Length: 103
Image 1 (cartoon, rainbow, N blue to C red):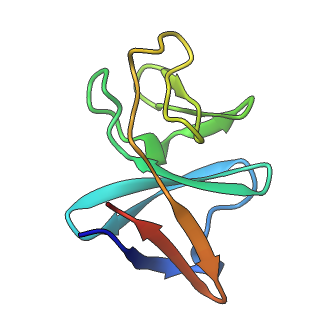
Image 2: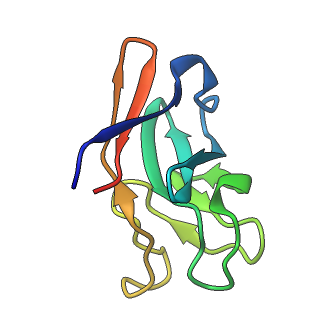
């Protein structure tokens, strides 16, 4: 069953060009703010299970803090290989609520 779930308030969103981890039902997400645009993606890097939400945003990509793999926050595709990717989830902000569709 799909539908949007509240994961945090708008005041808890990461600052510009930052990422953070957010616990939600059944998983941890990486919420990224890339030049004012927010995205929600799986928090686990497919390389060695690094925590993407503890990484940084560089040149519009979310960079894993463990080994530097960089992911497009809109598509989840890794910079170095289209076969390496993380799942991206629809995100919307309604008033003070940040909602994600975990599908």
